[in-house]
Amino acid sequence: MTDEIDEPQLTEEQASQFNKGADAIFHRWTAINLAIEHEMLGETTKEDFESLKENLKKWIVQDGGVIKVPDVQQYTEEVIIEDLGLEIQDGSIAEVSVALMKLYGECAKNDFVGVNRLVEIANKQTKHGVSRSYKQKYQHQRKSSSGKQHEDGEQRSDDKMDETEDDGWTTVHRKK
Image (cartoon, rainbow, N blue to C red):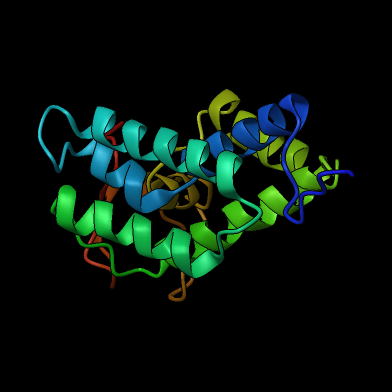
């Protein structure tokens, strides 16, 4: 008699790869990074989200064969809203839940292409100093387009201007 397991169980290598990919997903999660950057939960914000990430990874590695995306989403929402007191309304909890479960499925099949891609993107962001927040990404894009000719035909340097954009962010450029 053989004990067959209906749900895939991750090997040590698969779990390691899943954890690397999950870390990269969290590294790129803008809403969480903004909360950490601005210490929205106080001094323990980073540790609180690190704990959420570690608990999610352990749960998915252990039970990923039987849990579904809505389970991951519900758990994540409950922790963020009820335990941490933060409301994220950008739809990213659902996106991250889908990404984590997709990653689990790939790792269970020894398909680490997605993991490698996620880690590569996360490393490029860190290496090139690409910001974690939308605000900083936007400022980077604005700086790279400075000095372009404007609609009135006048050539101006954007680094002498302060601009309030439609999204409410104020871009303040360094004076020369």
